Image (cartoon, rainbow, N blue to C red):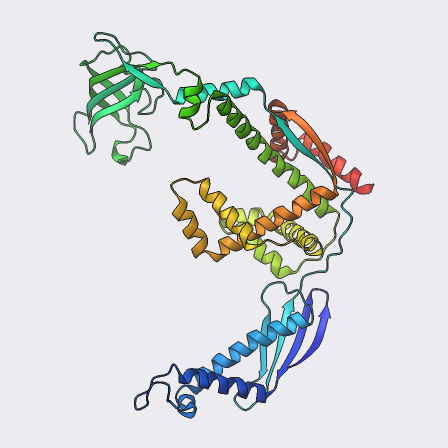
Length: 453
């Protein structure tokens, strides 16, 4: 194989590759020998078909298959030997080919830019530790207890009130006529939760067991039968059961019922859960701030084909009018993502960071455990979808790079409570929703000032 670098300027490269006809002939002969064990032709015993007969019968197809294999193998080697980082799919142009001839072709490709890494010690960010207030844990504990609500039968003659569990049968009509699905048996409602039809619960307040009650309500706009939507319906209800709520004791038994060792353990689990919720969101914000600073500190030329591909991915679900309306913004976002990805990848390469199969399998198992009852679905998703595995590998790799970056930047550690965390999240939300706000302008001025420094 003879390889010539025709040009390598900017983000474009061109190689010429020449494969000797003798090497091609050798590959063809090897292929014919391989096919002897597979081809079955009338008049010949299995495995005894002469190579020349196979060639006469399937010559063009065999030659095409061999050339495809040679092109894949030699083009990959030519690119690797010349240490070219390809951006996207290379374009192969055949110049001369055919049986008994040398294979002469060119490879045209976009290439990735060289990224010269800069020191990270000027990057600043804050790593937050969350201190969860005891009153918030108690509040969450009461909510959990409320969701474990138990009920006991009311005495005969007692009336229903808000918060009671009422059990009833009904027959419904619209304009005096029955309709499909107009009957219900042993329906259970906790009065006041308004989970059936709006305005239904309040009309069942004050009833007793064995009472008949006519309830009139307007069927909702999203009622399955469109011809009945927004129409007045009458539900003739027969009350068959009435139960009052029992206050759930917040004690060790509740803790055990909810999977903890005791009440203290349950409180610790609630505290950790709240911490994790805030921590995860704040870590995302910290990561975004780090990446914004890194991106702004580099000037990188980007291959247009990658920008186009990334823009298509970002806009694949957008309507045509939204596509045109946000064209500049989407292009800018695509460039930002590619640029950041190139920088992070270079940091990972320079620091020999890799993601092994064990780490991928551990992450898949973590996802499986977080989705009880859907284990097989999650496993099948990754087994049948190699793109999903590649995406997971990419996410884990990026996480490793970010963790490394955090060890090299000025990372302040700050302990805050949940109220302070809420304020940070609120401010971030306001800035992102309203780019003309005073907070956004202040942030812009601060960024420009830092850049001048």
